[in-house]
Length: 460
Length: 98
Image 1 (tube, rainbow over the protein chains, first blue to last red):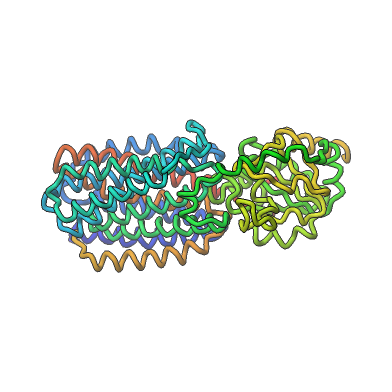
Image 2 (cartoon, rainbow over the protein chains, first blue to last red):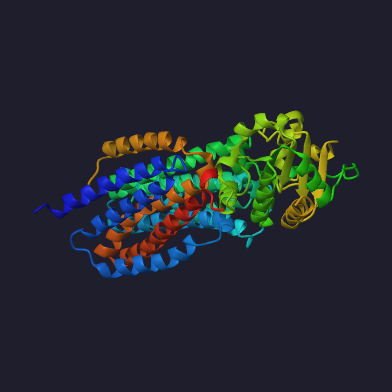
């Protein structure tokens, strides 16, 4: 008979291999679903193996698993537009699990906790606690139950860094004197408050970076939990998640030409209000759906640039009708996707894929930028700052240096926008005042719908 | 299960390198599903919670462990479901339904 412990370890080894394969298969859309399957099998095996542990009482385990499933199923079935807040919420759940386990482990072992153990335990609960409340705040802002505007006050960074420093000092004191158990609750409460304070100054446009960063923290706290429990499987899963979050955060901050510290401590969208003031009177050219349809019908290459505004207006299905109508006329239609378009990495791709637009028409910024000079019409739907040529030309602009989609190089630019109000970051966009730019004022979904009607009605 | 510090750090370092190499290759097209999938995999933390709640050494451990199981399981179930739903939608030009 093979001892249960060996069987358990074997299931963990297989699960580890399957987790790595799962991420590997995710590299291309053709194999990606196999990746999910591998992840599911690995997870199932690992849980099954864990249940073989000697002397487990299954009552509470079963209740937990059933309740978790009941909550998990609806969370898996949310609308695609709600995916960013769902993701933030799941970071919060992951961090909650890690923090609770860390807390229980501390009270099981205290007061005799070895120094190293206390160190990783502190890391686990500090990261876990701040990720928990931080992610809840992010989810609240994305769901718009909390105000999306950044809230800043004087000395904010000082207060935040001070809190974090206090938490670290408490951790060090506990490492030296684990018998000072009264300090432990403090080490949880302070990061919990820090998590809230950390997200307060962050605006919607910074959400892709922040979600990625929280993802990374959630992974690292899980890896720390692996050290505490002596579980290699957990260390590996945590390291994979941490690496993924880290790569995404780096991508996102590069795409905004900002550093982590700048995103976390820089509170965008506050100072520029004065700059947006004095320029309202400049003339723009606007056009009707009929005119827009006429220009599109005469084009041979069209690039559509979607942004968060498309998601807000739920316009993705109308955009697909437009794609169909133009493709039917033999017009080449591509989509230019900026890495930070939307509220999380890859957000636009998911929405467009949901609307049944083939993924090979969705091009990344670096792949599409060379095409704009040969493009007849660049149609911008609900995107703003990622198309702002000031990022290339105007050294005084707050977004100077941020890589943008070079839509201004297309022969004609059309911008669907509700009004001339500035974008999320409150920055003036000189693109709108170019001679080749036509402003299409209105709700994105209604406007695209009208263009489609013109296209199919007028030309049969 | 006991794991000494050095072995743990070796495992962490190797896993982090594999993670970087594998995830760097994930197309930006799939970054949203990537995040929801790693989130589901990260919920493997449920194994720690299961042992905590199952062993039930103290009342506190049982309560916290059970809540932790609920939180992690909801991530596993929800994470896999939504990732698969998203990936199902990604279709190439040729394979599109009329």
